[in-house]
Image (tube, rainbow, N blue to C red):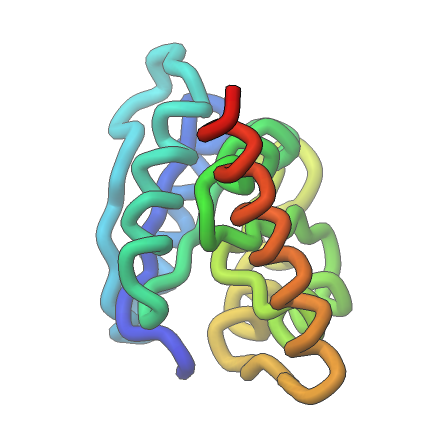
Length: 157
């Protein structure tokens, strides 16, 4: 597995799926940290996306799993943090190529979109697939350069 720590987060709409994922990670003896939420009480998904994304961004050996109702909000919010490549995945192909071609470091799911069996399969693929590098390295670097451009624009504003 290319990661040492899985950072896990969800809002109320992804809480049940997060709990299933925790049980799965425990059963596989995969090191993880749960960043919440810890109940089905309504919360803002952005907060949990940012908690996880910041922890993943600070260490290249970390990855993240985020869950909400659709997976869309989590992926949008997480991708606002420099160094994050969060991929909303709905099938095994997405999970594999998010890692192989895009070097994704966070995978996002929608509890209302994918069933737990599909999600666990995608997690297994995501956690055990390496980045291909090569021609894809240049493409990922272009994405990282976009973050630098954004920083320069913000500094001039």
